[in-house]
Image 1 (cartoon, rainbow, N blue to C red):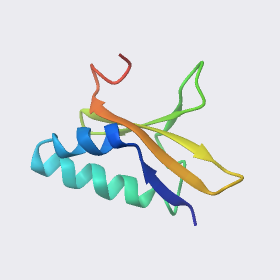
Image 2 (image 1 turned 60 degrees about the horizontal axis):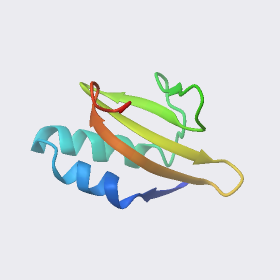
Image 3 (image 1 turned 90 degrees about the horizontal axis):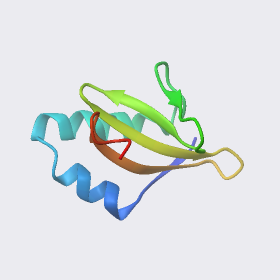
Image 4 (image 1 turned 120 degrees about the vertical axis):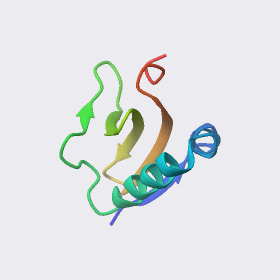
Length: 83
């Protein structure tokens, strides 16, 4: 089982999400502890990160398989996540 870490910027972005979306994003991040690469996640090119879709929002995370750690790097609307 992986442990979940959150960057401070990701925590702030989650706090600023609409309430219903916030709950779905938090539930999805917690589920990553059991399945770090669920169906639908995509490897980002040029970076050692993965993107996961939650409605119109995206979660960008890094996975350290050797240490069993997942770090949520960014949570944002789909049009802002790559900026």
